[in-house]
Image (tube, rainbow, N blue to C red):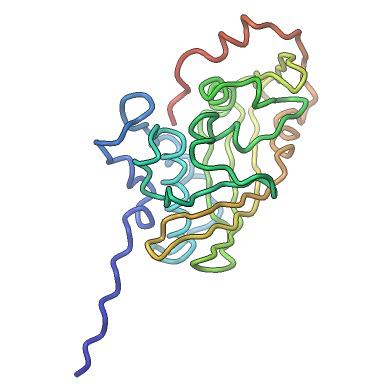
Length: 246
């Protein structure tokens, strides 16, 4: 009988959305792995899809969730287990392909939101960006809606949602302080990703496609935005401290 070649085991990062949280030897941004329990509970209560364990949508969803943890909280690319650091890049809406070091320096929000009348990544630090959005929306869950193609090029539609429980405060493209009163409602945005992975299912590139202004239209859906003068002291204060934990 001819022996069949063994199928390589799937990496834990595609089987468990919290796999990298157990990486005790990694360099974590605040000295320890973050707590995602509230976000996972919010996800379970509000998800629109129920992907079967081991299905392609489930594997893709788990991989991206682990990638988000690493991109947000692991300070060394060498510790990222979800990507191939030798070639990994991320591009937003057809823009320049940025290496992992870019997101490490500016933060996940700043890397994925262009300058606009509500927010300017150039006027926000890694910490202050997390403070602006995580204080406003402490839980921001994410799910895969549809997967259109499998490895090595994985195209899929995603959904990101949360509740605006606190006021939004940020600095816009003019350097002005923007405040939007909390409306308590849901912020729900969707988009497309085209990702390339290698044989080990490590991400080589991510191309994100979505309308960044959709989030701000939903944040300010009641038209309560107020503009204040730019103030260096306020900007510095906004950037101090740690972001709200997941």
